[in-house]
Length: 238
Ligand SMILES: [Zn+2]
Image 1 (cartoon, protein in one colour):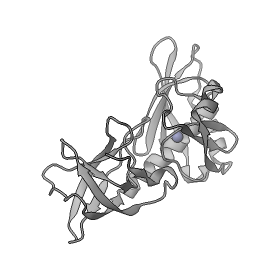
Image 2 (cartoon, protein in one colour; image 1 turned 90 degrees about the horizontal axis):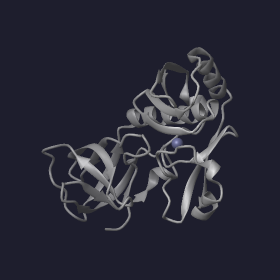
Image 3 (spheres, protein in one colour; image 1 turned 135 degrees about the vertical axis):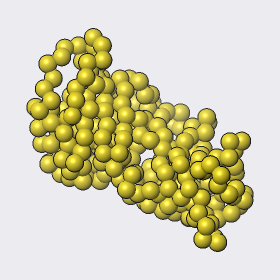
């Protein structure tokens, strides 16, 4: 099965696209030639939405995942959905409100990385909220001070930009890799780098807003102690 063209990598604001059904996997998952649906990964949930058929009927997509080859994207239909034909043309339509909420939280977490310059050991993105786990030996983090720092960064209207470097370039600059738990997606020869103004630069395959002003107001809702070296920082957007 050939690799799915990932339209969301270059344009995270693409809400729909025309596509052709290339295959249906053993579990009923739908493989298209191109898609705007982000597959679950890097702490960001897989997109939901629908596939519209030529006759006007719709297949609801309950989540999106990667095939084990990490190159093919699988759209998981809601249980009981009609089965699409190979070669059929469909229109992919994202559940945009949910995806945009993920984009805002995801970008806010990059700024949290900028505010807390420590190794990241894990993270999760939800609808309007998210968290990162940091390897920080000492406690003493202040929720309110961190919220203030975060909102100061957001209010600078920082642009988010995409660039690509080679696997070799990344290997010679290991300091660019912030997330110890999630290895950057290497193996295709190049790695996508995300810059938020000049405050954060790291390899990332997720979807982001174009400017930090779109995040709105962020609040650090909780800082939890998850072991001697692990602080879990939760944020909520309003
Ligand atoms: Zn990211």
